[in-house]
Length: 104
Image 1 (cartoon, rainbow, N blue to C red):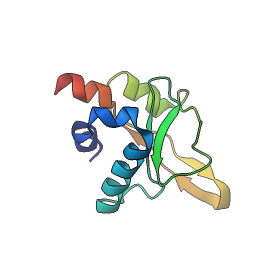
Image 2: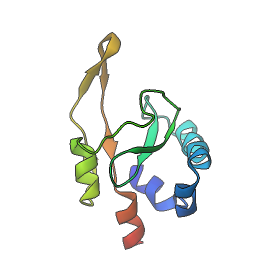
Image 3: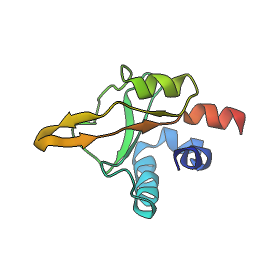
Image 4: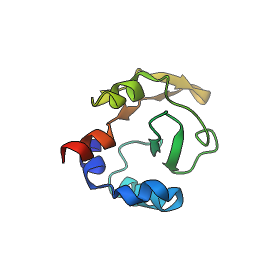
């Protein structure tokens, strides 16, 4: 699913975070397998847009996360499980969009 998302994401949306958030929302509602939503980062790992919008992701850098580092190397990745507030288990998955577009 992530590979398909990255292959269909219009690159012009990277310049319009609000529109990118709406695009992510449409896709998330069609296939909500990621219960905490979807987000896109800059190459630095800083959050560009997310859906649903979450205050804790705004301005957050994910550049130190294993799954983001793997994506920046062109790999699809599943992050290590994290435990957050209320004992919720979070899993993260990532795919390098710029890599998919270069190959497309």
